[in-house]
Image (cartoon, rainbow, N blue to C red; front, side, top):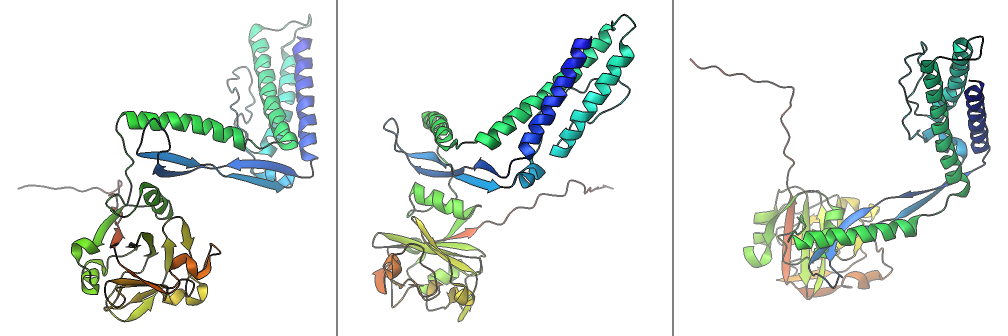
Length: 363
C-alpha cells in the first residue's frame, strides 16, 4: 500500500502548490452576470403578442487576491463516511482557510492510518484500503476545485456573448411554449388603456408590487374635483398621463391631497424609456397638492392647467438624464389631455403569525 500513501503525498503537495500560485497573484479579474426580466411586444414571426425578455448585464471586477479569497466559498461536497478513523475532520469546508487546513489534516490522518494499518509484510486490510482511497479521492476533489479556480483567476475571460446566446435560445423556446398554451404575463398595470406591454413591463421593473387603478379621467371625469375624490389619501401612486400621443407621468410615496401644500418624495418618469429624478435642492417640493389642479409634479408637470390641459416644462425641479434639455418633456407647452390614469399600490396582506394560537369553547 506504499503506492496509495505516495499518491496521497503527491496530491497534497500539488494542492499546496496551486494554493501558493493563487495567493501569489497581485490582482484578479472576475466576471459576474445578472438578469433583468421584462415584458415586450414579440418580435418573432411565428407568433405575436407579449413575450418575456431578459437583459443580461456583465460586471467586471478587478481586485486584490486576498479580498477575493476572503469571500470565496468551496463549491463541492466531500465524502465524510470514514468509519475506520477515530478522528473527525471538517468535511464541509467553506472558506479558503478551512480548505487549506483540511488539505493538511487529510495528509496527516491518512498517512498515520497507513502506518498503523500496514502489517510487517506491507499488507493492509480491505477496510483500511477503502478508507485511504476515500482520503485520496477527497484530495483530488479539492485539487479539481483549485485548478478550476486558478484557471478562472489567471486566464478568466468574459462569457457574456456565450451566455446571452444560450439564454436567447432557451428563452425563445419558453416564449413559444407560453404562446402555444395561450398564456400571457400578469402585468401589474394591466388595467391601463394607455400603456403598451413594453411600457407596462418597464413600470413594473421600476415599481414592484400590485397596483390598482383608482382614477381614469375618461371614466371618472375631466376635473380636479374628480381627480381628488378618487386619488386623495391613497398612499403611493403612479400617475400616467397621455397628451397628443406623448406618455409621461410620475410616482410619489406622498398621498395626494386637496390642500395647498407641497411634499416629497417623488420621481417623474417619461414612461418610455427614460426616468428623471428630483433635484435634491427641490426634494421638499416634488409634488404639489392643490384642489384646483391634479397630479402635479413640482413645476414640471401641471395637470388640469387652465382647463382640460397638461402643462409641461421640464428641467425646473427634475433632472434631465437624456441630454435633450427642456425638449425632453414639452418645453413649456400646454397639451390637451387625452387620458390620465392613477394607480395605487395595493397594501401587502400580512400573514398570520404561525406561532400564535387561538382557542374557542361553546357552552
